[in-house]
Length: 406
Image 1 (cartoon, helix red, strand yellow):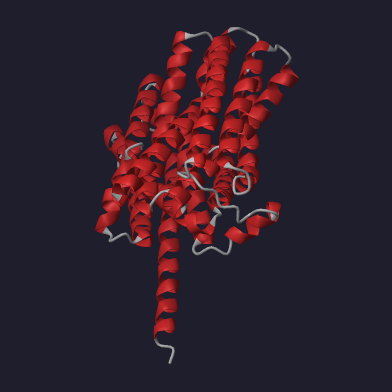
Image 2 (spheres, rainbow, N blue to C red; image 1 turned 135 degrees about the vertical axis):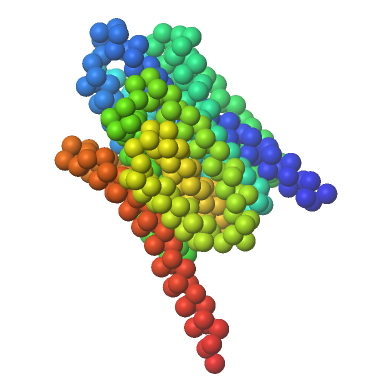
């Protein structure tokens, strides 16, 4: 009976959390899918849209750091519902105002408010469900990265850009109210409890996460994962057209196909991890080493089809390491009461590292040929493998020292 109760509780908490994050993800992609229609109106330029996108990313990254800490102090229902309603209201305002400074300000608030969701949601899942259910729930978070953009795309197809922002904003506000009410009911029924280990520490509480086991290592891994997701991912369509000779339409189609396959990585990871007897370090080593090999093999063939296949497998295996970080390591910190802060710091550092990497790629892509870029990609993945071996060796020596102490 207890097992059935825990399963039911995890199902309820997981469903409301994943659905909330899907809303967050489609809100994050509205600008991207609406850009072509916005440019056609003549009221927006590429420079302005680029500014809006950059402002959003900066606000979101900084917000992850701040709201990660706040999420361990303030109840999830306030953080999640607050983030949704603020982003919803400013989405509507953006569609209605023609004043550029206000439009830019809207995206500051949209970016910052959407950063209020993931940390508190993962904290809720981690602190209120059994570890095996927490991992599964967090794996389904990855589904949001596919479902969110898909919903945003459908809205952009059916509506003009202004209605896309308005309808999306109104829907986010409605979901905000629903989340607040559902979380309140779950709190009253003691289905959800809330740990406040960060209370009265403020931003100083960030230092606490650096004391957690393997945190520095996973910060490094988070940077590599974000580089793969953002910086490398950004250049893939260009790689397909410039190096492989595909048309823009075909390149975009292939990129979408790779993204779809990569969305399966979290579900595959849980099964493959069992083959490694739940040894996270061994699986991370295997994932990055294999990814590095697939990238390196691109140097030895010019066949477009083979290159696309190698790119697909490289991204898929790096996705395994990503799942270990976001769906296993972070939820495992539930007992510390610092899940939201851990998520925020790792997310922020990942964005920062990826931003630097993207600047390096932007500079080197004009001075190096594609072989040089591929070597860089492979070396970065190899560094993740080496880091996992170093940590494994250190932990083994530590265990041996403890074992042989007389």
